[in-house]
Length: 330
Length: 303
Image 1 (cartoon, one colour):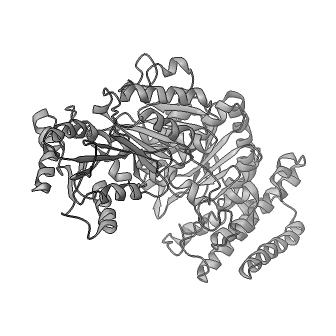
Image 2 (tube, chains in turn yellow, purple):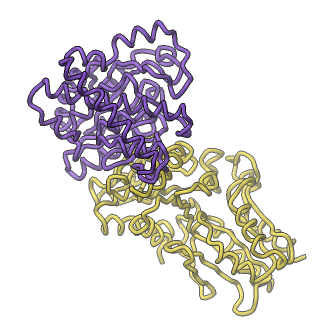
Image 3 (cartoon, chains in turn yellow, purple):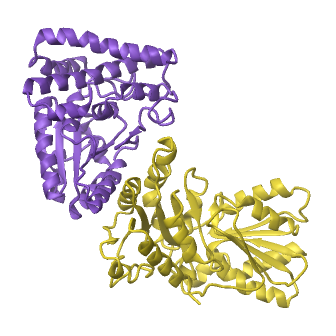
């Protein structure tokens, strides 16, 4: 069983092997270093000249990748820490996202920007955030964030080789070492081609008491929690879309309609976040069918502390999700 | 008039006549756009390059228009016309018509046709242009990318990231800097410290600092630099001193009339006229004015 990290490494290697127009750019990617989180390890050796270590100028080399994409390449950019996406914001919003639409469909920008987000490793306020919400809703881009229930490498390959739209591909630092989780009570839906939503339930038949909707690194907290709640005989379905934007609305509504109690949780900070949008979409579709207001969980709205014990207080944990679920049941 | 005629012109006088036609067409189209704006026929804003036509025509005439690539900015009508001569597509675009080069979606600042791309974010296209040069180098196409930017954009950090990468990776790109002396309303000397024209040398990108109002000088220098870029696969920077005769966009000009007058005496069309046969000019100018007027009238009548 491949880990999330190995899956991504293989996905990148297979994409490089499949299409010579694929190139990878980012900081410290070349061997022997192979990238800060080792996602590109070995690639520069196998694909010399196509895996390029850049200067430390995230905005600049993101722009370089946009230019390469406009001229027929399918570049992959690695941003070492997701927090540094702010440095690329102009290239993402005013260049990458704009060209196909404002040039009346005359050009394509098949570009993937991959970057790890998330805390839990004591990196502190500027290396632990989940900033993907800043790019959700930007017209012209997709924002994708596989959990460890997804075949992350396959999704990455699809984004690189098949998708002609620019994709922001969010990884999660704490998922890297985890094996891909599979289970018989797991199903997948393909509302958004290439970016499946995975649902895992902790019961064999019947309806869920509570449905949890989440994404990305939260799967690490939620999967073991489902096992625990199973022993408490609480039926829970956990739904993980890999596509954050666009939102797989029909799929989420279908799961939401299975029970009237919903918890939406995410690792990013509270306030104008993914869960707010999803909640509104579900309220619109499920009005009258909810047994309780939707519960939303997100990190506290503050700088993420470096000290592990303080960081835990700020971030969403399995314990906090479980408490929210029991509260919803009471 | 097709651009390829220019590069193949052997006769210097014929070359200058071609330059004049190209430059005069830019001037007339832009004056027409300002009129249309004043009439309320155009929304948004219009950034004109009045007085900078020698830069657009001199640089782009030194390129292979079939294969080379141009990245332009918010003041890009002149670059666009010098590149492809599609005045009809440009005016239609700015009038918001479906027959515009980008179907009316792009507008004045966001033009795309063949190998021409412009965007309205100052400095933002510099790294994009570097990426295009990288792509062409990897393809081995021999194409050169020209990245136009002004003195204003040279305050943006993205430009220095772009210069660094272009030089580090040995890419076929020419940074074409038009110092038109004003960033919106601010004189360049109030915005920049040190010597603007020397900055790229610190990145190992050689500079040519020239009079950007003399189209012959611009053309000859650009030709030399483009040929160096092609043979060495390394970047160059062409620093051109010119002057923006018009306002930044529309009706936002607060400059001293005396200063303007000084530069009107030195503007590129006036200087080129002095080198040409006056009777030829008298013949050609009204014809070109008429062409543009007809084109605009046709577009407005839905033809």
